[in-house]
Amino acid sequence: MAEQDKQGSQGAASAPAAGGGQPLATERGTTSIDNAVVTKVAGIAAREVRGVYELGGGAARALGTMTQRVGIGDDRTQGVSVEVGETEAAVDLTIVVEYGESIPQVAEQIRDNIVKRVEGITGLSVTEVNVAVNDLHFPGDDRQPAEDPARVA
Image (cartoon, rainbow, N blue to C red; front, side, top):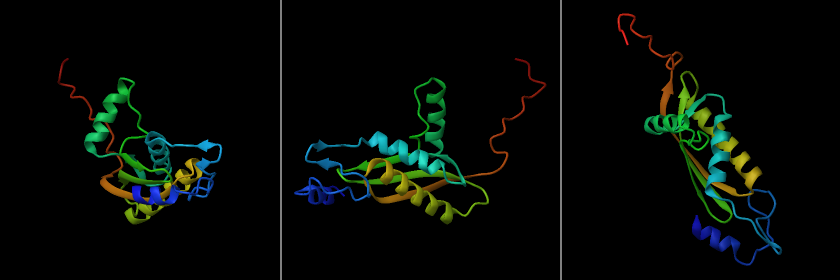
């Protein structure tokens, strides 16, 4: 991806971004998009898709829950990894799918929505969206176990 960015950005300072948005490099200056921005956009876009229960693997979800409780976590970036070049971005995500949903259909809808959102918001061209399904969520999985009435605190 980096090689394509170098070739695509030489001599085309006013060419529009491949994503169809406004140019990221113009005669008046350049715009750079940080990884954190693309990560948040991709995370939000993935969560917009029906059938996505959560993002992140088991350890990432557990760590994310702990950091959110103390106010330092951001669940929008959990389970999302991006690689951003000058004009392109690649996205990797790990998801938990609701039981009963078609995994291939959910993955394709995620790809479509991430490409639409990232390209529309940032102007970067999305070269790939890799989806790893880590788990299935079954109805009732998030119920807290009832406390044992015989147990005294």
